Length: 118
Image 1 (spheres, rainbow, N blue to C red):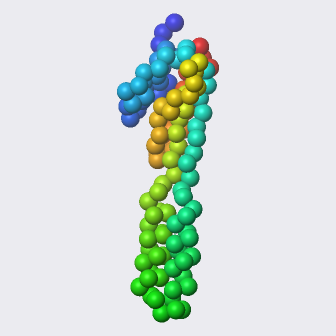
Image 2 (image 1 turned 135 degrees about the horizontal axis):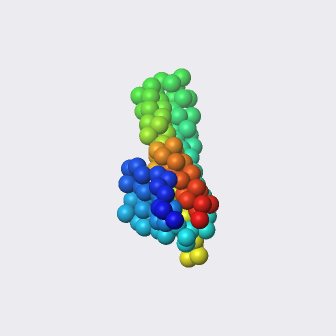
């Protein structure tokens, strides 16, 4: 049986016999399942925004603007991330984690195709 390549991009190669994910190599036959875990943006920065809004009528404009801007900046720059977890006989291994959610989904789909084709 020839080796079939399911994905080869950004340092990730998924084939019918092996998976090379950012320098880590896994045998396709040893992977039982794959799952993704999402980490959403934090919600606590909105507390800063809410704390800053009452400062405007109280004539603490600088404090209000500062709290609102810091809260929005922290929320904006904490992009959601998605992790790819491979499950084998030895347990779970986090293979990749990225803010590029479509890329992690493509890797997930390629791993699913590789383990279902064996």
